[in-house]
Length: 199
Image (cartoon, rainbow, N blue to C red; front, top):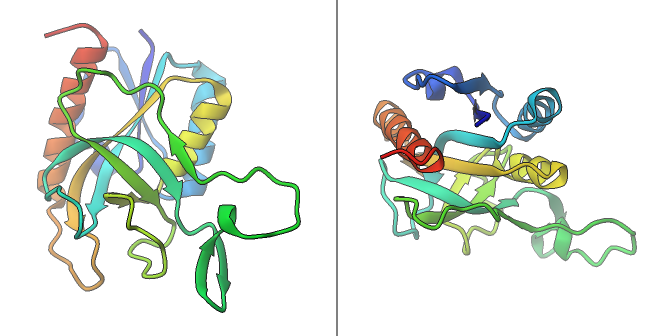
């Protein structure tokens, strides 16, 4: 089976090693990830493309630093306009323009028996942005929405695995990057064991 893992940074990829699984560092942010995912799909046409990295958890979510989650949906949270009433997502603006209004992108490939909780995510180029509507999501990252969009458009099976590294709160600098990368690496091996039918 042809499986490629995309990691936003070399730090997130640093502990992962597995024979027969390709790894790529995509770069941080929506633009870099869209390019890396598209290039990998067009060059290698993987059976599975997996985005793996750390993420922040919103204070209202029932998740903790160190948890590993499968992302079930992504929203490009800072796509929109500031109006007199505040920030409004592009999909919700009453614009008289003909364009595809996309808001929540789901992952249709989630395995039934995966040993991880599922999470809804907001993707932002501006991390910790105070103006976005995070009420219906649990985590934030900087790549997932672009990754979901490219994979869905190109018809490639995909998954996103995230380890919680920090709380999404400006001024809250108590990150556990080392622990979250270890948890992410362990989670990836467990996920791959399931995909490859191993125990």
